[in-house]
Structure formats: structure tokens, C-alpha cells
Image (tube, rainbow, N blue to C red; front, side, top):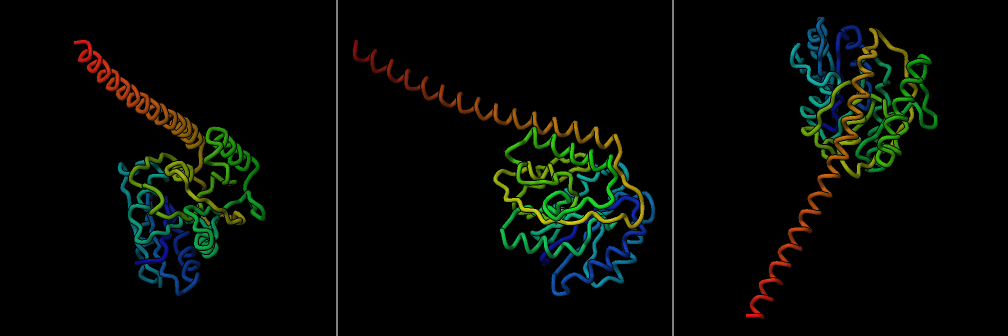
Length: 270
């Protein structure tokens, strides 16, 4: 039904909804675009979304996750959006306009040109800029990315901004149902969810927040570190299981061959 679905996770973002939709309205009017808000708010953000949807020329949908059903935090919200989207191409962006909606066209063009499965909007590749990101957050972002690459050097090497929350993904290339994200950094989960994913990057400048406050905290940092270790351990157990299965199959074949040989030898001596 749509060329692209823009998934916007929201949490108490009432003042960001209208300006975001106004800017999305201006992007390629001929583009069949769906805007899907996945909302975890405790304020009146859902009613603001519904009110603005009636005034917007784009198709706007809302999924509100009530308290107690917000599994996985922001990552869980993105997974919900991937499962509910009505297009193969899905763009994930924040509502606070630090991710410029106008970059959507460049992400789509890059996916079409390179046939990429994931196109990451990067602050750290050539011509990208971290903008007014504080020195502490910049160091935390870069350090978190370096740690992830140290644990998964081959699979994550092509991506310079692993902490980006702004990216385009083909739903057909990943198994969203199998994902179990927890915390903010869902891009990492997506990149590690499928083998052989084709990834590309598009540079952008991280903009100033329009309204509201960051939801980042040391608790989210701890969740990220714990999840990173879980992903690394799971990968090793999968490889171990594969080696064990191959070894068991080989042992079964050898045992069967020896049994047949022993039977033939007994027959020959009788």
C-alpha cells in the first residue's frame, strides 16, 4: 500500500508531533508515505497525534502501548512498528527533529541505488556532523560503538554510527518477530539479526532538539552493555551448537559405517 513507512517512537512528545508532520508533508508529494507513531507516553501525546492526523495530508496511524505493555523500551516500540508497517521500506526516526525528516529522500535513493538492506544516517562518516551533541554524550556514543565493533568486528565494520536511531531498513531482509530488543539501540539488534545484510550510510548533521528532554540515562547505558554481552554469548552458543550438531552427525555416520563393516566381517567368518 505504501512506498515507505516512517516509524516514530514517542514518549511524552506532544509538542513535537505537529512540526514533524508538517515537515514530512513536504517530502516528495508523490511518495506514498505512511507515518506510524508507536507511543509509550503518559501525557496527552496520543490525542495530539490523533488531532494532527486529521489535518495531515499523509496517512498517519497510532499504536499506543499502555503501561505494563511497553516491553523492550524504545527497541520494543521499533519492533512493534516493523511488524505493523504496511510497506517493505521502513524508516525509523525520533520525533524531536534531531533527525532531519528531509533526509528521508536520500535514504530511499541510496537503498534503491545500492539495493541495501539497511541504510544508516550517520553523524560520523564523511561529511556527517554530531552537531551540538555534548562532549560527554559524544564520547559515550563513540565509545559504545567501538565496544560493539570490538565484539562483532566483521559484521559491524561497515557502519560508522552504530548508535544512530535514524535509519532505513527493508522488512523483508530481517526477521522482526525473532528480535528481542531491549533498550535504545535497536539498530545494533537489526544489524546482528540477519547474516549477509547489505549496509550503506548517508551523512547528516545531528540537529538541535525541538522540544522535550533526552530519555537517555545511565540505566539505559547499563541495559545496552548487558544486552551487548547477551548478544555476544548467544552468538557463541549458536556456533557451539552448530559445531556440536556437525560433530554428532559425523559420529552417527561413522558409527553406522562401523556397524555395517562389523556385520559384513561376521558374515564372512561364519
